[in-house]
Image 1 (cartoon, helix red, strand yellow):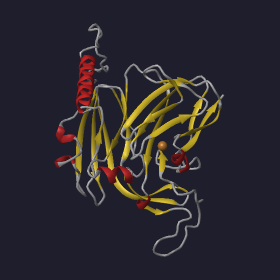
Image 2 (cartoon, protein in one colour):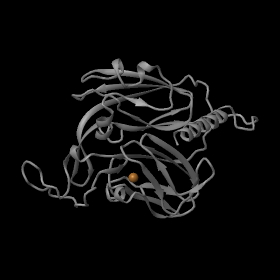
Image 3 (cartoon, protein in one colour):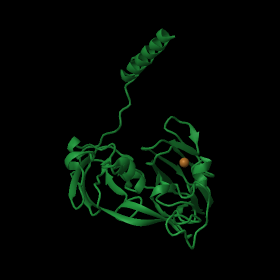
Image 4 (cartoon, protein in one colour):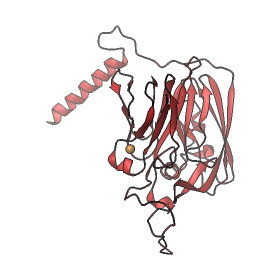
Length: 305
Ligand SMILES: [Cu+2]
């Protein structure tokens, strides 16, 4: 038994090696991402770490850590080939940082240790070079588990210089933790015993799963589109659970050519897709995990004729 497991492992390694060398037929070249040359442009962004009570929905208040006062933080946009400079000003009483994906930087700029962590009151400057067209998360890595759960998350969109104009929708999927809520609808304050005035109790998972920092369709900003336009979606998952992202009444292709209307995203992953908008309506958009829908991950996509 042990022998066959070892043999199976060796076979997997051989297949992986064959793929890395360009396929088993020897003629195919590996597919490489398009690398754009430097534009000479520098985009400078200021991110201020601020702790605040964040309204996830009516009467659902979260003891949040934020970039610039919101969850997610501001979407950072650049063009492939740009240099991006992020000035992180830590106005909180805990260490914080910025870490991101698929851009190039020195290890000292990684946001995980040493001088790339901003202590309370400190400012740290990060320099990234963005040669690829990507849509990825940026997030805290000073205390990654708590920083991300508290709300130190955002999206970085690097556009291709030759990208077709589109109506772009940025979707950041994240998960909150009950212990960081200051108030939840229908739940008594543990000290005073008093219940919040407003809000609707929505069950055990209430307000745990968010799109763009809010939960349920009365709080998540609705997406808007128009028939005939190119509709491009940048979906980023940066919580503690896997999610699916499903748009009713629409369809598009996965990179492998599979027709889909529902994509899977593990924590820290991201997918972009686009389609030509062809159907007016007030469409439901949601994660397909039932407990995540019940927990808040559902909103609307209003398409005008
Ligand atoms: Cu989900």
